[in-house]
Length: 384
Image (cartoon, rainbow, N blue to C red; front, side, top):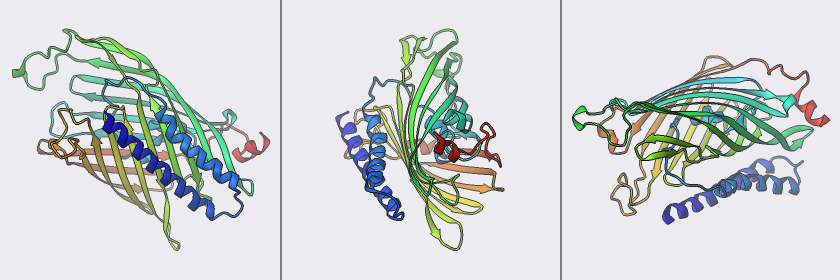
């Protein structure tokens, strides 16, 4: 456990350093910024990172469903992302994990979010269903994000911080009749009858981004931190061992859009995603190339497990660190509809038993800003 904590601290220091460098690069191109703006933005990023470290708790339960195309649906991971785009957007995702293994995870997710200027930010909602073996999960909730403009140029927002919160419910169910192998017999940890538990669920997050001046609906740089299952709800009488805890899950995301060609809209977007419940760590490194109307990308996913874990490898460190290599492709049918597909090639020991993982996402952005306010967001900010 001490090794895991040490690796976490090292990663967080690297993360802060990268964010610091990115901010300096962006700000150096705008002479109108002052040193105070630079210090403010650096402080915001450091708060995003270290606020996650300050929240600790008991960790016993499995982490939440996995998504390979996380960069196309940041709202589900972080409620503070809600409303950060200029228009209303909804997404539908489906994932079939470890095809060929009976009882492997299957996930479906729907989310929608948009700007809500009269509320000072954005709102959203999501619904998710996931099943792995005998365990079924259903979650739904609403989200709100408060929008704070941290810097301007010619009265146009050039950096924005959003603070978000989500509230909803989480349902866990167990089907005791499910069997991977009937010859094994009855699982002694499962109760005789089906069990269903419904508990309230809260989450929070922060999301800092620099919008593109020519395309404010896209973010030149972003960094976010969030925590789910904030209250660590307990599922009582769920198994023969008693209650099960939905432990807090922490996520960190960051990415940057580099314009590769000045003559054509070609962008390179590297990003990083980290997820942990403080027992195990997952990290994704991704790079997407946007060549309108296509998107191509590759990701590497690894996991860090305690050396005494049964799933740990026998390498020198005693920690398994390989999980999957991901390839993705996306297509913008027009300026509003996006369709993406990803394939996970399993690098772990499970690769001998599965043909891989498939994931698809369909995202639609409404052509006009949501009509909740009767005035422009910039006008609202100037007034208040």
